[in-house]
Amino acid sequence: MTLVLALRVAGVILLLLAVAHVPIATRLEWRADAQRLSPVNRQVMLVHAFFVALMVGLMGVLTLGWAEALVMPSALGKPVAAGLTLFWAARLYFQWFVYDRSLWRHRAFETRVHVLFTILWTYLTVVYACCLRLQLGVA
Image 1 (spheres, rainbow, N blue to C red):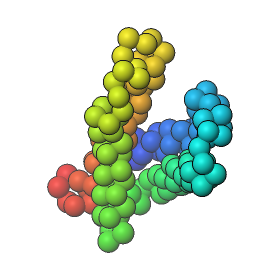
Image 2 (image 1 turned 135 degrees about the horizontal axis):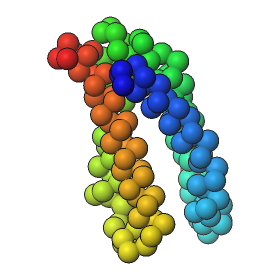
Image 3 (image 1 turned 120 degrees about the vertical axis):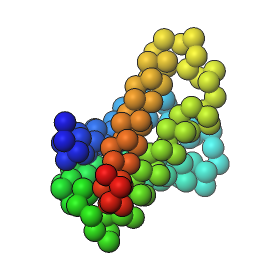
Image 4 (image 1 turned 90 degrees about the horizontal axis):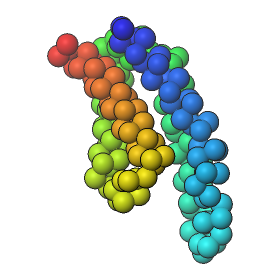
């Protein structure tokens, strides 16, 4: 698989993830939980969830639409690739070291979701790190 194709796959994954925020929010009952918060905290939580989904979607559009540009060294390509690599590496770190393991351990569905997201975050981190290597001329 070429890096451009890997980026396009990443772009599709990110677009699907952005759209998946709606069923995820439903499954995790975000609205019901938000009702127990103060009005300001409820609004902050819902607005942040919206903007996370929006940013993930925009990352997907960027990656899918400009995959070739992400592998061609450029002044803008370096910070974009670095930022995307850092973002997804941090997300992978949080998956293992910030979320409480009791939320998924010994729970079949939650463990499958944890493993799936570990694979996704690893894939995204590696793909963007490969772009960064090309941007830096380390390939």
